[in-house]
Image (cartoon, rainbow, N blue to C red; front, side, top):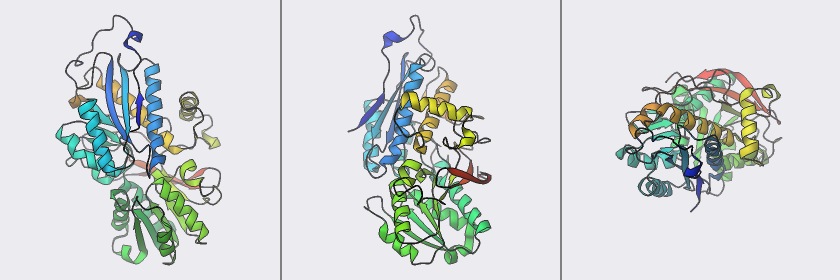
Length: 402
């Protein structure tokens, strides 16, 4: 079992004379000197590239602790590996809740894993805060009252692509290769909602299971349809495979990959950065390698963080941006909670983030959660890979369903 911990400094390092904050004796996972928080990530398995989000979050928590913690407490983030397996996610979550007695769960990654643990956490009224998935179902507070989401919803993202194609390539035939779970199905549903009755005429689709070794046969089948656009909706390993196989087959569609599978190092580089030229995706983030952001304060903060806490890691890997943003969200959330770290107040504050501009977010994109909006992000911008960097396409697209 892989167990990664952003550990506490010894109590002796705390300032003497520090008084015990209110609620410390009553709130699960909270003492006068620490708060224990649980998380589950795919550090191994078919989606292990996304484990970089967890590694970056762990590093950011270390930076918080190096600055003295929050409100006199260090953060003990206990992050376990679920290998992108729902049964393992349940096992690890129960261990965190019943064994480690964490105050709440934060940033657990993946649609299948979060779906598997949602009912259990809700039954215990444990917040499932800012989960790293864009599955649309989780934005429904009535069905998932303990959840706030940490990625743009897949519905928002898929509709953005559909609207772009309707405007720029109205006669295109569209092939969709999607992961056979909520992630992939949300993209299908988004296109159906946008295209309406034209969906069956314009779209051909094929799905894959994460247990499959390759998706070569699906690419060959979709190529034979004569589609001029290929939308990929899944996880990074398979996105890289799709790019490579599409190129090897001689097929030259407009290739669109979903946001979570747009990492330069994990997705574009393996098949080749030149081969990946022209690929499009949606984003809410700045590209640290783009010269126009060279003097941007947020990019400078990100680079300084990476150099100090993740030396040698690829700063262009967008999964590290996500981890940094998750860390800033955690820091903001705990500061807002003050000394009331009851689960009730933690949940309340997850729905009360106002006007937060995160370091790597594009200008104009801010976080605003409320009792009617559980989404950390409600704005996106399309971008195209030019072989060396991402070029923004058009302007901000706002989720009109928030």
